[in-house]
Image (tube, rainbow, N blue to C red):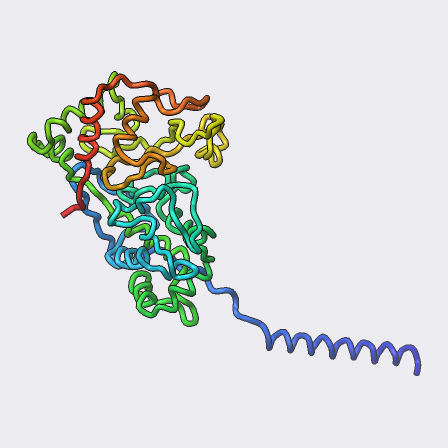
Length: 362
């Protein structure tokens, strides 16, 4: 066979192989990936009613509350399907029966694992400019998704949580009602939608109209006991309790938090070192070592134990801790100092904080 003939046969063979490859590729090609589903609800936005003593609820543009997403979020909040072993729901650690906390120093997650911080209350978290004790998430939406995929808390993966919820026909139908039907072959359940719905429900967990609110904002001078009124004065007096410098009271409303981070010296080991370094792990700023977000004092009588590590069991212990100036350390907040309060003033402060137990909007 001549060289020309051999080259001709070789070229024909290569052409045949190329055609076969093209044919196989066309037979096995898949459709382009489906576009991400919108996590913005399709229903009519509703106004969240607020009780006396609170400002309007801040609403993110990309997640306006609707009746459907709030209902879905509440259902998800109490669903153990969001945990990998069907044992833990959001409500385990943020239980309405305990002021939306769990009455434990630290929370328990899947397989009995213990966290290292106390569960903060969900009450009025709609007003928090950052979430978690260390402020590591900027929104309720980001906060809501975190525990689901945390290996200690709920232990799921995003895909696993989506699948578990999608397999519940009632929840799947609620997603379609809240966000519209999904394209053929797609699930209406996405992790972003799960987090958004839970956040919408959490924005409705508001407490106000307490005896304090009725006294200061409602004009009812009989709403507070004499002890609570004296406690309010101690609370606001810069030369006494000086509590309002961080647990703020405004002219028309009171959040009882400045949404900032402070080092009180909570959680010092016997060698004088901080057990939990707090905000610094997020901000990388030395000034934030041992600092934690100021919690609201709303319904504080329901949310014991106190502090980020649950180390103080009663409000009396909290007052005594502040009277002693916290625990000394290089980053202790400048506003934390020894307080000159007598026994009556300490008791009055507790009475005032107990007057902050409020209710949802009627």
